[in-house]
Image (cartoon, rainbow, N blue to C red):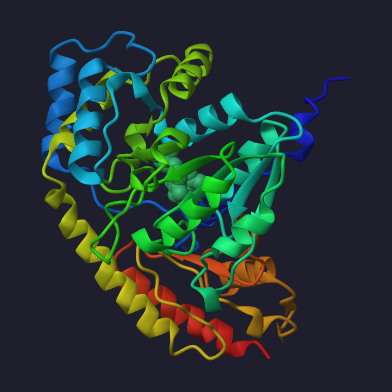
Length: 397
Ligand code: PMP
Ligand code: GLU
């Protein structure tokens, strides 16, 4: 008898990717599904970045690369951290990986084992939770709600820390809520961390360039936090480069070395061509990301306007990323035909099957009251999708 390893019993499929898969399957059957499930910019990678990749191939950058990334790319990342974030990392404190996803699992595998607790302000990005389980650590969610703009308070943080707490992972701007912690709010959290020197912070800043407040504060730039923070970033979201698979960290050298060691046994250095393309993106004037950000802002406003006309949806105003995360509790206990809505998963399935709109259940992000809508698609498709959702939700009684 063949069997999978025990760790597979508990591993849940990524719900963002699962919903994207389901909508693709329905589309292949000829059903006109609009997918607002996956968080992926619909823009193409800017031309000058693609040119850098062609150039890399022509110049034979086609061999194995150093495990933590080409030195010139790591130097470019140091320049970016200094230019945009007032952070003084050295190249040997940078590790480039196959997407920010690999950057995060490297850090978790390097730090977390049985008995270690990892704090996640909820809602959190879907993969953090599963990665912690894979490393045999214990994920502990700190709840928030739409009334609190999906942000935790310093008091909640203090109450959640135990002698076993090793790591705190958060994203700002946040996937899935779009919430953003300003410098003042980060300072208040840092005051608490100052009381607990053993806790390391992973600050996932992959949505840095999609921030409608015009300001981004890196957690590592807060006084006293640099030596205990891992700054995660990448090119997937801001530069529309999801398929190139480039993410990176800035971290204390001892931790960067550990991540390099892990990566050396799993994947080696990431794609040579993508690294050269990423260098062009990172060294470019960050203003090149503005038009995409402005398009996301217009779409956010369109989606919020249309959703606010649907009775029962509770909304806040996300300040970044490209998601809205409405509270849908009003619909729990309601029915239409054979559909009974008891939770946000039921609602996601109802919207997929009745309205042919794919979104993601909030449960995947540790919040059972909400659904996540990704608005990284055209205004035309968004308008059709919101209209379909309104019709379907108004049928529930
Ligand atoms: N962190 C967050 C919060 C994300 O939304 C994503 C997007 N999947 C990632 C990390 C991973 O990004 P990448 O595509 O670079 O692996
Ligand atoms: N970050 C995106 C999302 O949350 C991409 C999918 C994924 O990597 O899980 O939808």
